[in-house]
Amino acid sequence: MTGIGNIRFGGMASGLDTESIVKQLMQVQRMKVDRYTKQKQLLEWKREDYRDINTKLLTLRNTVFDLQLESSFMGKKVTSSDESILKATAKNTAVEGRFEIVVKQLASGVTKESNYSKDAGIADNKLVHAGTFKLNGVKITLSAGESVAQIAAKINAVSSDTKVKATYDADKNMFYLMTTNTGSEAKITITDSQFSDVSFLQNFTSASGKNAVITFNGGSDIEFASNQFTFNNINFDLKKADPNTTVTVSVDPDIDGIVDKIKSFVETYNAVMEKMGTKLSEKRYRDFEPLTDEQREAMKESDIEKWEEKARSGLLTGDSLLSGLYSNIRIAASSAIEGEGKYRTLSSIGITTLSWYDQGKLYIDEDKLRTALTEDLDGVIKLFTATKDADGSDGIATRLYSTVNSGMKSITDKAGSSSSLVDQSYLGKEIDEIDDRIEQMEDYLIRVEERYWAQFTALESAMQQLQSQSNYLTSLLSSSSK
Image 1: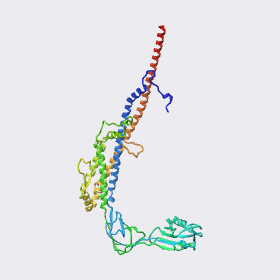
Image 2: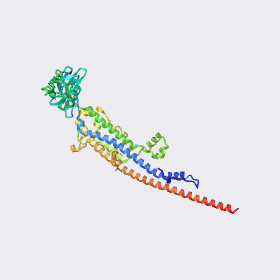
Image 3: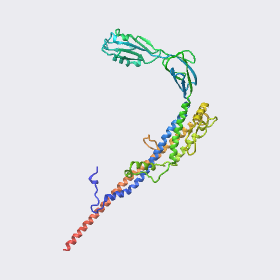
Image 4: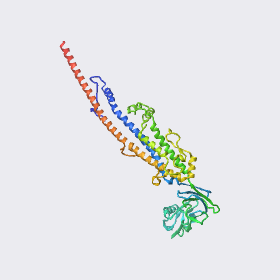
């Protein structure tokens, strides 16, 4: 809140618009602060540009990290000759080949039902007497007067131990118990029942489920407790039993999956190269400086956007750090790996550049890529994943990961990270220094403004004294002339 002591009145003796004069004088002085503010804004924009590039580099690094791993190329594609009988997928370790499967029996659980409307121990859908019973060895206590719904709820409360759940149909007065698992180990067994008059519990004596039964490549019967199981690193999902039909399951390299991963790498790589190439060649508009707050207030939002688009353009044009990283990434992607073999460059598997001015973008000849993957998958894997420890050479993905990782660290040293609470980067320190200068200048401007007001106050005081003396002399002259 402004105190009465801070209120200033100017021009009362001189007639000058002191406040307006001081304001204009301070505008001239504030230009010194504006210079620092504009410098800070340029540095902040530059830092944002660096960090934006680092974000794209992170995506590229994650992509090439996956391509360093042989497992990324070892995916298997599985087809079933009759998916109405069984479906299948495979782990990377599955053996490629053709396998004949006969599904003789599906795995099943147990479902038991009973009509409780005819039950002597149930009246008006409520239990007549209290008691206990054991379901698959787990003791359950029921109280007199509990409803069928409450009975089902108590059974379901221990289903994790019994592997049995209960439900009922109030319209048909049917009570059901069903196992949550399948196979011969799935059981519904009620023992030690104190409810001799509750016939619907007595109907649930002892019952077991069935295992799934298949033959594999004409061998003997193999049993599984579930219709979903893994055998020979193949994941099976049985749909129906048909002892008279042989289903052929084919396990092959997942060429489509590998192509998709390489396409994703190329798209990510191109996005990074386009971003860096654009920033390195962007035009710099030096006549468009960052706007001051006063200038922004006088402009439309759309005009501000257009102005600032030009003002922040070209901040990384010819930047040595970015230019070096741009070149290193291109070299890492385009150079041949050491050693022998048909596939030693990206171009040998159909991934090429079109022209020197195309920002280093890669283009895929998918037919050539698929041919390479089909003819020599191991050779393509080596092209991407080879390491110096293995044969003295780096694969494309291996050296790209190293190059990008090093470049990201250099950019972080230069511009910091948005996730860091304290920015100790080179640009961060520069911005902090400018903040200190701005703070010092703001203190200086306060002192300057106070000095201006003191000078004008002194002027007003002097003018007032002169006016008083003039009035006194005029009065004396008037008196003497009488």
